[in-house]
Image (cartoon, rainbow over all chains, first blue to last red):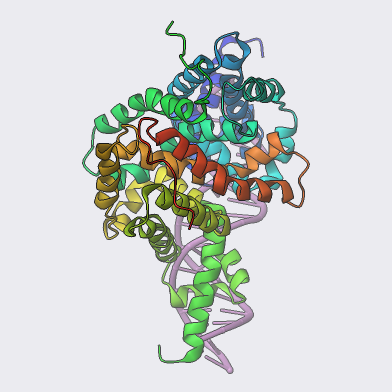
Length: 216
Length: 216
DNA sequence: GTCTATAAGGTGATAGAC
DNA sequence: GTCTATCACCTTATAGAC
């Protein structure tokens, strides 16, 4: 516990477990793969973490907690509403681009064994009330068209996340010849502006003259 | 092969396999569960389909083929472009609502073991050229704002599919008290119009006067 | 704390009776 | 075509030496 190697090994294991679990899921992950990835052997996994399920729980909870601040932080500013959207889209796409397996992992586990994970999520709170109010406020001001805040939030997240988790299918049908992922990478980069424009064009109220976003 | 029972059992097995594979994925599925679901025993599974992998292939390919016509058929009409979008969104949401595990299943398998599935997809062709041209044509006419057809297609599909596959997470954070799924069902129903409006509002060219969609 | 060896149980697949 | 019994292997987990 107070040994330097302990911490290093523990962290190495968690990092390895994250990599394997995120790519293969709980059912598809192998303790041997995690051990190999961490450069140790299987027995040590059970020494640090009692079971596969326990190790999974840690990875899963970290994954969820890791994803949330990204959603919230941008809306905690005083920026113009459309700028918040631009910043959120840009930063969230950047985040997902660096963690492409994260959304799929969370959603697949949640869908395939909801009962096992309910309590794992119960600790985690996410306060979206202030975002809801932020959106509703803009609707009331007439800056944006009437839309239920939940739909708008879901729309924005959908436009960011789905293209990343559906990459293998998209790549297969849309860009079959892209071995180095160059086209796809460019596509993702384009989306930082495309998605923000798409959302803002959709919600901005044509009757309102206050349409320009601040170019900071 | 010419026995009535053969066909019934074979179909029963495939239906059972689809149910189990779609919910748990290849790695999480158990042959025993499939046998139970089909009301037969394990040995019979191997009698009809040689291996788990073989059975999976059939289910996977059927799943992909099943999903594609939904995407294409609406755009094969002469309707007004915005009406095509409305119809596509409505019908696709209806389809996914009835097959909520389908998109996640395909994408998870494709992401977690792409090498195994490459050849399974190689048989399946999807021709989206005419949709691309359809969109580009509207851009050229000035009916809609400039946007790369691929981005628009991805946007529409994202807005339809993501809310369905992320249901467990959404439900957890947005509507924690919805045991009978009433709120979620209503949310999905709302999206048939919300998504179409969202897309059309975003792309319609304010300079063009030809904005009304035909109310058929 | 880390390793090797092995136990204990599960899972896909087959043999063989009916 | 369908079943029961069983094999062979894989995977998680533990025991025990160092």
